[in-house]
Length: 154
Image (cartoon, rainbow, N blue to C red; front, side, top):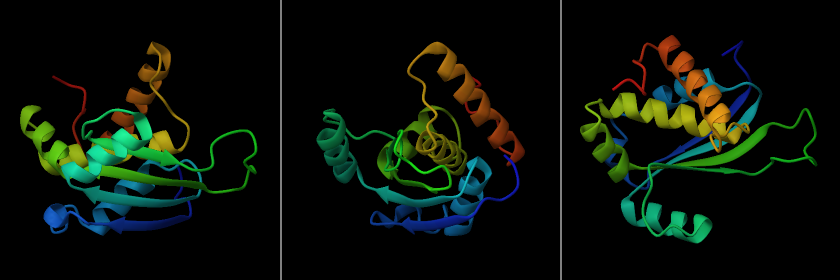
């Protein structure tokens, strides 16, 4: 997006399947590209069971989903200079399945989901058509700048 923002990043692989292909330097590059302000983020790659439990416990949806974003300092009481703090959870099983179905590489899909999660962490949403249009265009622009194709092209 703009000049590099300060980033404290933890990348966790309790599900180690993508550790070799979706490396910490790649994740850092994708996160940094989507940052609009300083941030403290954790990106965690989990299996279907952990993804399902988190989605069930925090969203009342009893299935694994591709990405979950837990933003910890959204709202009115947040100091303007406080960094964005969030955990972004990617479910390896869903990510790989969707990449195959959408005829994308796992890397392309992981980059998209991480950019999507980072935007959510910074307050972007897609609850209505206008918000969805704005967020999707940002995702397209960020991913294009990173050299990836439009994630919404069919």
